[in-house]
Amino acid sequence: MSKKIRVLVCTGTACFVMGASDILLLEENLPEELKNRVELEGASCLGHCKNSSHGKAPFVMIDDELVSNASVLSVVARIRELADA
Image (tube, rainbow, N blue to C red; front, side, top):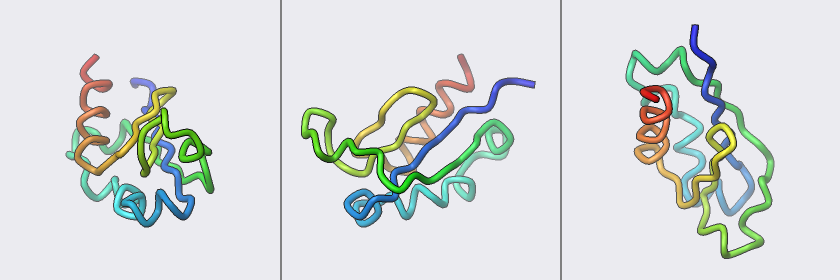
């Protein structure tokens, strides 16, 4: 079995209101072939909103890669890329 792709969603206030609440429902939006490949977690704050060079909220870590201005679509697309690699 392949290594699971770890998705860590920031649930701090800024990220939550900017869309992290939707990303936390990621498993409902994953294609069937990816559902067993993803480990989804929430984190109270990833601390990236304090530094504007990191981009804008919401922030998601996919494995060790920071995704700023994340959406369900962008997270699913990146998971698909990693799963196909």
